[in-house]
Length: 135
Image (cartoon, rainbow, N blue to C red):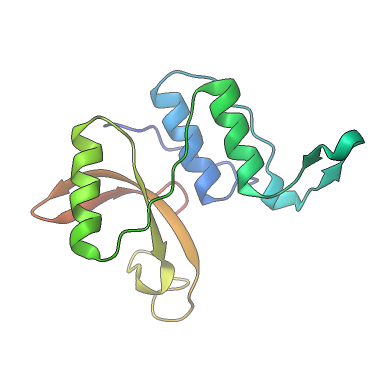
């Protein structure tokens, strides 16, 4: 899969990946950078809009057909099996990375633990080929 890299500074790494996937499938996306703004609103009848992923991801599915599903494999072997299966099925897949181990992140590599997400483009000889929208 060939993704066009999108890096809107108001979006976090997950949000930038969603934009790349939406553009790949030529579907619309509307996102409020809720995490960047730490936005939360509670309206009438306990209707809530906030920075929790649950609401945002539900709306992406409901209004734009983009479904985000998290999978927590028990080990690397199971993770690789899932990744290969999803890529073979034509599904985009992202992976969690700790930037402490990202050699291309000169700010955090072997210095700071920081959550980050990348799209997986391919698997070659059991090595992941990643698309990183921010770094």
